[in-house]
Amino acid sequence: MNSQQGTNSPSPLSNPLLSFDLQTRQVPMGQLLPSKKVPDAARGGRKYHQIVSSIRELGLIEPLSIIQPDPGKQEFILLDGHFRLLALKELGIESAPCLIAKDDETYSYNHRINRLSTVQAHYMLKRAIDMGVSKERLARAFDVNHTAINRRISLLEGICAQAVALLEDAQFTPEVTRVLSKMKAERQVEAVELMVASNTISVAHVQALLKATPPEQRSDLRAHKKIKTAPIEQIVKLEKEMNQVHTQYKDAEDHYGSDLLNLVLAKGYLTKLLENETVKSFIGRHEPGILGHFELVVNTVAMEEDVRPVPSE
Image (tube, rainbow, N blue to C red; front, side, top):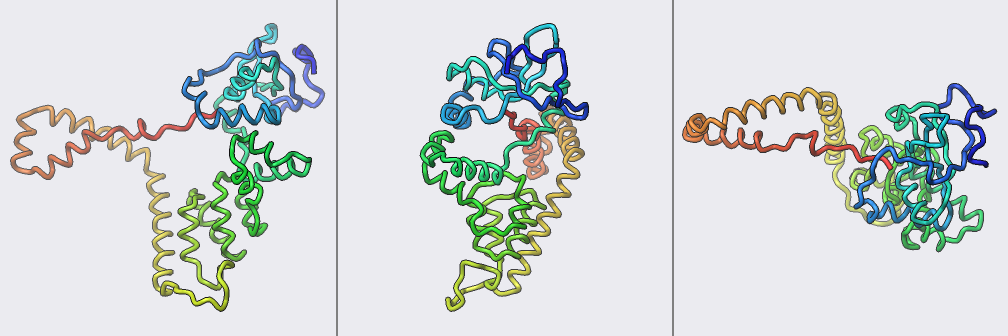
């Protein structure tokens, strides 16, 4: 599509309720202005190398997302796709397909965008193979070995349809479904529901659920094989403890803001208190245990400095 076409006139497919035009537009690299600086160290990361390999082998699959602040100027601000833009420039590509946003609310945009889930990536790989793309080429595109591609392709083998539907929008490793496939269909659904409810779809979690699964609900055990199982009382206790952990997690999540504020206030007060050597010496002589706890709070790094959101690409 001509990069100059449609600058002032709306697309025939435009919809006032949509945040982006439905048609992509080829935009020269010189007209794309990044909205943030990508750290130099990011170029040496695995994610960046995977993007470069994927574009080199298969081309750009997901268009860049841009906005044109001034319709009178051929300049566009990049909203999403900074790694892809760097990769395109590294590969010497002169223009890129872009989706043009209708507003510059990047915060709301980041919440509207749908990242490719693990299940969707699996379907994409299957379609690529059906279209004749070799596994070797896919391995080069994703910068992984042949074994990793096979695991992604066989991701849903032995997984029932209802469990797949629950995992549709989630991110997880192929090892999760490999463990999940050792359960029968009903138990798979129950296990996935527990993981989704606690927002922890991980290998450790699904392995714990597998250990708590009764033999009759497992598909990897033969009927004639003698199995050492935990007493039913232990299984019930384990499930009860897991429910308690989930309840405690939700409670901590609900009170996170107020607890963090109290911690900051307490830390500030205790810091000033212990700066007084007379007070510190008195507490140390009479209540050394309490002094230790006070110093622990003072030396605690603020939680908001440790828990930082991972920047989107």
